[in-house]
Length: 80
Image (cartoon, rainbow, N blue to C red):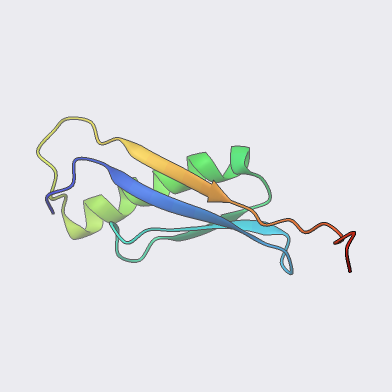
């Protein structure tokens, strides 16, 4: 893996009412929590576990993790 960071995408699941995190950089990452504040420690712990289990392709002593959150809202269209 040539990336120097791990990018995690967090999306709001309106039906389940939780944030769901996944990453193309870490195979098997799938974590959910009721808030972003609760999601972050779960994501970092899961990534640490997955890197220990699968081996880490990173050489640096610390690995930056970027959690990018996306939530879609809707408003009424006044023209409709």
